[in-house]
Amino acid sequence: MNVLFINIKELIQVRENSVDFLAGKEMNILPTIKNAFLLVENGLIADFGLMENCPKTNVKTIDAKDRMILPSWCDSHTHLVYAGNREDEFVDRINGLSYAEIANNGGGILNSAKKLQQTSQEDLYNQSKVRLEEIIQLGTGAVEMKSGYGLTKDAELKMLRVIRKLKENYPVEIKATFLGAHAVPAEYKNNKSGYLQMLIEDILPTIQKENLADFIDIFCETGYFSVDDTNRILKAGKKHGLVGKIHVNQFTTIGGIEAGVKNSVLSVDHLEEMRTEDIEVLKNTKTMPVALPSCSYFLSIPFTPARKMIDAGLPLALATDYNPGSTPSGNMNFVVATACIKMKMTPEEAINAATINGAYAMNSLDKVGSITKGKIANLILTKKINSYNFIPYSFGNHQIDSVFLKGTEIKKS
Image 1 (tube, rainbow, N blue to C red):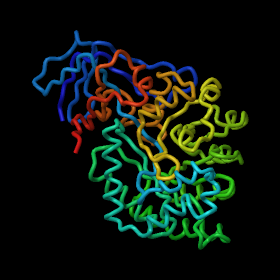
Image 2 (image 1 turned 120 degrees about the vertical axis):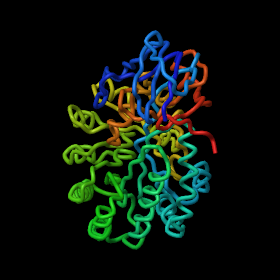
Image 3 (image 1 turned 90 degrees about the vertical axis):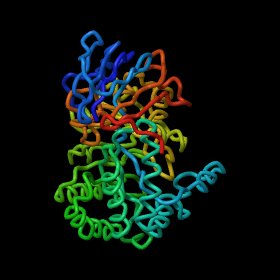
Image 4 (image 1 turned 60 degrees about the vertical axis):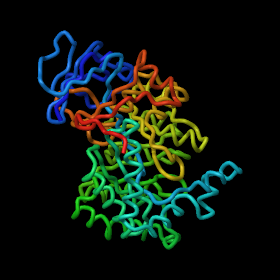
């Protein structure tokens, strides 16, 4: 699609040369151009600059007067493919049960796994595409989706094949993660090592053969999987061409971050509990810390200590953790707002965390995350707003006028 946006009040996240990621004080710098134009050719960003330098062209023109344009959100951590919901557990938490107590009573991940195992691949796809269409309208132009609610060979592969079909049918940038090590299923309750062996020997070869995933992930947490388990699954994934990620430090700190860094994982996600030594381990590495503020909000657990981490010189990405149990929302606008309100991130830091750093955390920085020539034109056109600070300020109402993927406006279905 070829289109020329003119009279843009402010073009946000402009990078002549895309950076790998932003860390520390750099995160508070958000380059913009006021009174700008943006030219899209063949779905890619072709040119941009001041209106006084706007080229003359016969392509479709959109007047963005009083409105702003920024790259679409990059959500690097979701569990968007799932069956049914867990609204009954929501009520259980209101009535005083903890996340752990619900899990011990047969709820939580195992509850979702049971529902998913009983759901056909077609039905699972139809449920998931509704969620994908919703988050696209909320400005997400790149999204990572995890398996992990299958917990059997057939169900895990079913999830990954649904993700592949979504990728084939929608213009959004999608990455897939194998998270078989999300929980130990009941039939392996006393044989966790045997379950990991099944994941490694029975599922990973098929994933590699069918090219079903980009990443491998594990829930490194007390009561789930240990540091030794984490090392085992990450090394196995690497042998099958999968880049590592870890769910870690959500409820307890057991050394998972250090294991992740030693295994050169792309990201460590959650981080609600962070020790000083965990921050030190992450310094001067290529591993991206990822915060999931919607999860903290929904479960009433601590928020990732973003201020402490950024002030220590670390990078940080923001993602939704969209899933049926702890974060039944894929709204990145709410994530950005909550990061500012509850984690004391500046709007500049939050936008950088949800665009460039999010793109890095899903290995898509060459395609999305900034207004850079040659990148895919996945864009948010805002409503008429005074400044980009209004985006997190107006936390209850997103400020999106239109969403463009590959330069084409995505109409509400």
